[in-house]
Picture 1 (tube, rainbow, N blue to C red):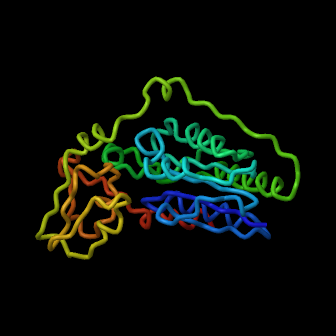
Picture 2 (picture 1 turned 30 degrees about the vertical axis):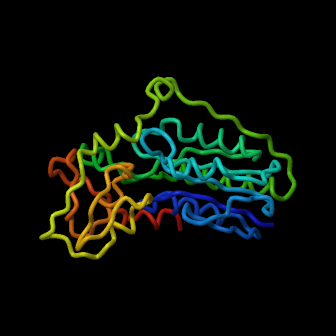
Length: 259
């Protein structure tokens, strides 16, 4: 049996959860694909796993566009995973909806609380550094087993999810509003080591190189990927007002929780 997994992970949090799911699918070949790769036809696979983080109370736009282009759906059993920090928003609901529109049958869906990676929230002390807790990981294992049973032919009903009242009320901000709130990105050329990690971290290629990073505001989606990744702290965002809200997963031992 073969399963294709599609994910979007700027900080690596969602990727860790996805890898855990794939390891739990005993006897199944899990073909992992990222947003940059081009597996869109799922007709040759027995199942699908979709995983994405919450991005301004919804799906990351590049990943939403990618999932909307999936072809070859024929009711394959699918596990949908949405990771989030302080706020889930409509991420899980929207991802399930896109999966169903692609003619996939969602047999398991989970919103997984993870450490917060959004710098303005981290600066306020909303960090969730102990997440995910054992109970949530146990639920993730159960959902992986539900998918495995469906792949082996056991009848598993399709699940349905709905957004909470406040999530329906708040909606999600536009890209333009999110970038405006970011307040602009600035690189301290004295601190910059010219390592290029910021450009590698950008999921929409909004950083060009001119003896250092130059930020394209018209393409930026305000993901804070470059800000979090910069090893010297050379990149700052106007909204941070020189507060340090960088997310450093290696300092909280996150990977060990998925072992």
